[in-house]
Amino acid sequence: MWQQIVGHETVIKTLINALNNKKVAHAYLLTGPRGLGKETIARTFAQAFFCEREESIPCDQCSNCKRLQEGNYPDFHIIEPTGNAIKIEQIRNIQKSCQYKPYEGIGRVYLIKNAEAMTVESANCLLKVLEEPNENTVFLLTAENPYMLLPTVLSRCQRLNLRPVPPSVLADWLIKQGLDSERARVISALSDGAPGKALNLISPKEPDRRETVVAKAAQIQRGDVITALRIAEDMEKDKDAVKEDLDLLATWYRDLLVWAKTRETRLLINLDFLDEIKKQALGLDINKIGKDLNDIMKTRKNIQSNVNLKLSLETLLLKLSKSA
Ligand SMILES: [Zn+2]
Image (cartoon, rainbow, N blue to C red; front, side, top):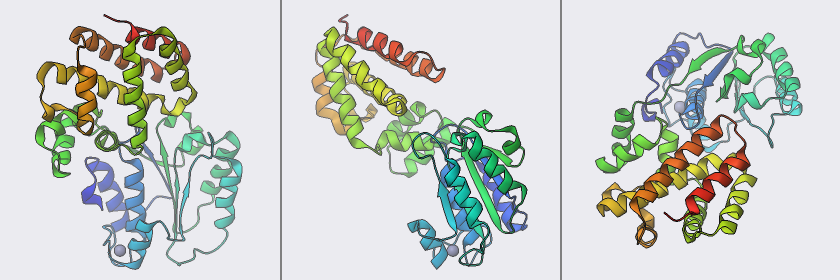
């Protein structure tokens, strides 16, 4: 439902107006950093588009709404990278399916996630589809890096740019999700205005991942060079996950610092790991942890600008493992 989405009022209004006035574009491109809500908006739009009862605000009750929520409505298609790329076969399948009438007669919506992962062949194939628009067929593309898309594809899409949600708005929303205000404020501050990131900090999609990071932190603090380098090598193997691992590591060091300084549980992010926080914070040098946290954040930022990943991670891990 639109009301459950935090922020992005202008974008939502644009889509609702288009639905109400029956002036839906053939293709929309939703852009913005990860976790901002691109996919949530796209899915809500699809639900509104197919809803049997309402024009622009999905009723959540009808059979179409329900099937969309369960992920089995036959005219809503999701295309996402297989491996690192959206391959030509995937776009050819779209092309083929466009030749037939939609199963349920209303229309068709294609959600192309991480559209910048299309190969040049894929993008050119999609371009052909976009150039001969079918009636009642809508393409929703999402992209973190729209500049990586072919300009010809860009020019065929109506751009909807999502901006970070203001921290106070995000904090209020987190309170509505049941967080107490202090924790909501802290998590909002660490989420870069991305609701998805905030949710992932509260309850990670992959809880095991956090456990692994916590275990790594414990190993790092034992402080031998070989272990540090091994952890760096380990992290580098899963390039997609490095940013998230560093985010988790940063929240962990932050919690150690907060605990060492205040002993206040309500300020902790990884509250469910309280015992481990107490254990690891024991006898830690506060200044060193503060410096470590800084180094983690810096590395996290550098990685975005595509520096040598292996070298950055090794440098970081060696710094972290060094005793004060
Ligand atoms: Zn409905």
